[in-house]
Image (cartoon, rainbow over all chains, first blue to last red; front, side, top):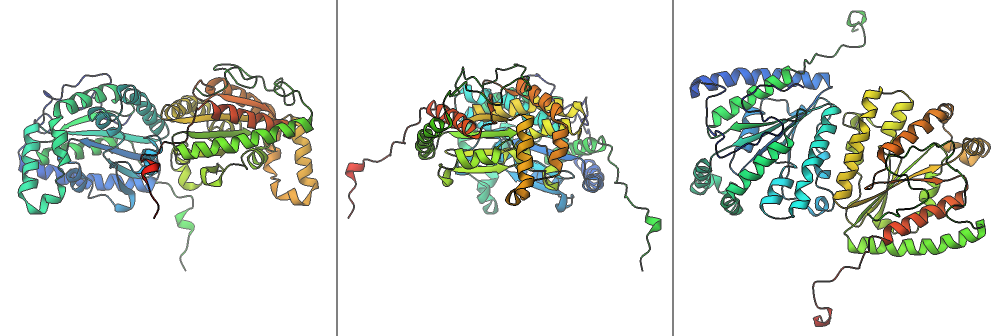
Length: 272
Length: 272
């Protein structure tokens, strides 16, 4: 498995995570200043660019990055910042919003499976099948009998993907409730951010403890050797970006990718 | 579960099936003449039509019929005969041929998942994900380590579908090697059937014992309570059609479908 084993943010299989005490701002990974962090990020960004080019050229591995977070947690920002340096040709973002009628007419993994990466591809899930446990549970859309059996569906679905050649990196961007308050307030205060404000976010905010409990259980049930969860402290955006870039580099590096061998002898070819 | 429990052709979970001794022509289900059988078929066909209309109207259940067989086993004929009376609006056939480059760039269940039925829909798989075990194994496309772990993938994939509301009926059309010889010969003898002849079929025919062994193991490993296999004696076409029509009626009947209630009081509406 290509994932860093002893990473401070990696959840072990079965590990109960109490998100109330799990840091949303720490220095565990990079005890550096913001300025130093940003310089370091630039180096990692360059490395990500190289590694993704190799992934695309080799056309052998597939990388799936699952991003989950509470509202304002930084999913959009992470995608814009950390994945921006990748070649658009080899990267795709799949956003899973409220399911359409056609989607609801199928099992919940149907629309998800359609979007998984092919060879040489990087796909980022902006929200994911985990909403079909967490949101469904907290908003009481279906009873426990329905959402609880989904742990197994998802673990086995991800096993299929992994055993058939997909590397799955699941990242939870962990912010504090206070940080969310500030970010929501800024969406209300700044006209340019109004479009990002959704009154429904306040309903979810009122359910914060239930969401933390649901996510904690999700991590325990679905952080596996083949598709581990990483809970990234995300109150400080530069630190969050740095941590994710670092995780990406380590994961891609471990794939040991090579540029493909050509099947002809380049020396024997003559351009006339 | 809507499937007939004590059906003579149903494979129990873990049951080892020796296809060499399993009947390809019998009278277990309908000890009748061909003429009587055809009359009976007409009655069942009418019932299938009614039940499928209800399935479509209710828009609640999904029916997936998986058809597997050796070449000339009768998949196309079954589809034309047994499913022809259903409304094209609510039925779809998905044929899984040699995978395309895009399909090969994904896990083998990716293209399969895209084709599963939605609410109110009947989908027939003409060949299926089972080729990714059987053909892959017999033709030695991948080693055992790859195909053997697919039993679990598939059992769990089908569990997902079943638990989320799809009824899965898996049917193997079982013909004898002699019957195949006759059918292949007729494809060679009749100009109108030439297009159905594929020289590669002879390669598979030479591997007949390996195919029977591989299918036998597939039935033992993947005939589950949520997605059972039925091995239908298929040397006699009218008997095969009758047996499958009967299976369809019993399966659909057991769903207890109702026409949906409208959400308005029809009496209060006035057309002006």
